[in-house]
Every structure is written in structure tokens, then in C-alpha cells.
Length: 121
Image (cartoon, rainbow, N blue to C red):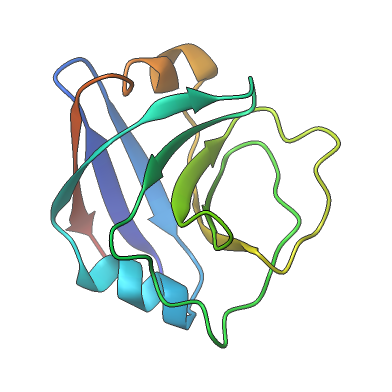
């Protein structure tokens, strides 16, 4: 797909290239722009929850890597993985896109509103 989505707080912004096409990705993109609040999770990722949850039927699972933005169907959250060591393939982990920000930059997304919007194709 090649769509670029920006996640911007008052302290930083992180660009994500959406390279997948699935029902979950299409649902995610259809909801933009939107605002979410991110938090740290388990020293592995920054997460935020969707309400209502994204559609997942017909979307493939994935084996996440550092630099992946995923949707975790079991909990209904987006996740910026920065420490995916030891995390294996799961049908519930749906790949959304990739990013190149460091963990300390991702930390600047925490605690306040993050605006998520499409910025390019």
C-alpha cells in the first residue's frame, strides 16, 4: 500500500509506513484521523486501545519484529514493538506497518493525546 501515517504528540512524531492490505489495515485507515493515548507495556511495546475494536476477520497473523506496528486482536490494541525478542508468530498479532523510531522517541508518545493521521501515499 505505501500509505504513511503520522503519530504525533506535543513532544514528538513517528511515521509509520503501512505496507499491508488486510481488513484490519483498511479498518484502521478508515478511522483516521483520530486521537489515542499510548502507554508502556512490559518493556516491549507502546500500546493504545481501540474502542470499538478493529475488524480482524480475514486478516493474517504475523511474527512481530522490532519496528513493527501491530494490532493485537485479543486485547484490541495497537502496539509499537521495540523489543520483540522471544515473541513468536500469533494469529492474533496483525501487522499494520513499520517504523524506524528508537525506544526513547516512542517514550515521548506516552501519557498524552497522540493524533494519528494519514500524511502521504
